[in-house]
Image 1 (cartoon, rainbow, N blue to C red):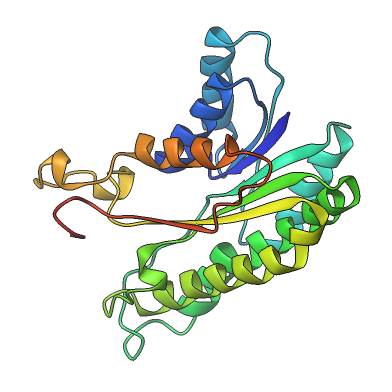
Image 2: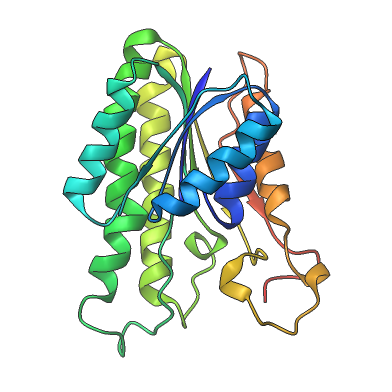
Length: 233
């Protein structure tokens, strides 16, 4: 089966892509850096040489780039069975004090890009009456963070998009899941002195993705909230 992972070279996206490879999924990967994509592709193929892995550098905040990535995937002629919308943009700010384009920039990556990919590949899944869309939202969608106001708004919108898609696609055998991670130890925490065991490990998110994909045909995991044991940081 073929799977798309956005934001695939770092953090949760990297862990998800690797775990999918371990479970024999062929991959379509995007991130902003082609050199990082190439390095990750070679790393995966060294371990899983039988896989098909296609990559394309993509700025998901750029509509033309986003459309080009979707076209690139479709040109390969391999139907997409799993779509993982992982890529996200986090700009810490309070709503009253943020830059004028703060909401717009985050909305483009965190909502509009998943919306476009869900529509593009969700139509194909609907026609085939099979597939699974997994959107990586955030606990900020349900517990807003006042120092990340517009980010919280966009993640709530992504959660709502997921809920609507679930209702729209359930009669066609297509599953739709939202995963809502709390504080996860990714590159955005580089340099922190907070102990690693205060964070969620990216592999925990990847394991949750696989658990959803391995559920029986009659089971759709609607939402998973994953928090650090001692609470969010």
